Amino acid sequence: MNFGTFLWSGRLVTFLAVIFSFIGAVILFIIASYDIIDVAAIVFKFFFQNYHPDDFHADVVGNIMGAIDLYLMAIVMLIFSFGIYELFIGNIKEADEGKTSKILEIHSLDQLKDKVAKVIVMVLVVNFFQRIMHLNFTTGTDMLYFALSILALCVGLYFLGKSGH
Image (cartoon, rainbow, N blue to C red; front, top):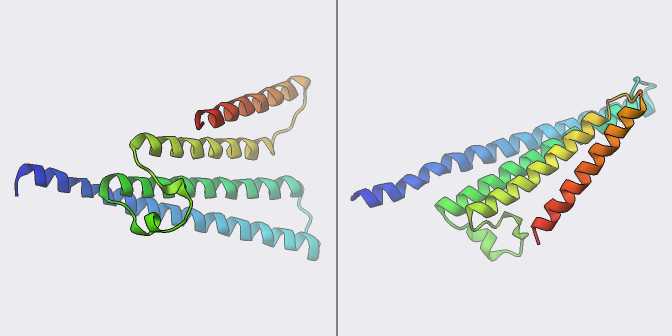
């Protein structure tokens, strides 16, 4: 075996990133699903067992937003896992043959980076709204900062959408 063959075979070490990213995605999907089930149990108690916590609505929405955040992070892990596999190991035959979504089809490292970055931005947006749910606005300045932050998010998302076209 010459050095070139040995070096080329070394790319298979990326299989570790593929496996553990996929495992991480599955774990995040399970945790997010558990969080949704937990919210459903609290809502059930609210309607049928006379359970009335203080910030019920904010807690329910915040917990659901947290689950969405976890689902999005799981999607990042899946995209990363599929992308690394396709770039360094080989094409996924089932994805090429099927009429599935092209979101997991990655042909370059830049494509992988762009897809992961867009989902990470969405994770940050969801995380922002989850945190905003628990803030108390006491002054007009607080409301102004809130409005400016929403405007900044909208502008950022607009330009992020424009970069894909």
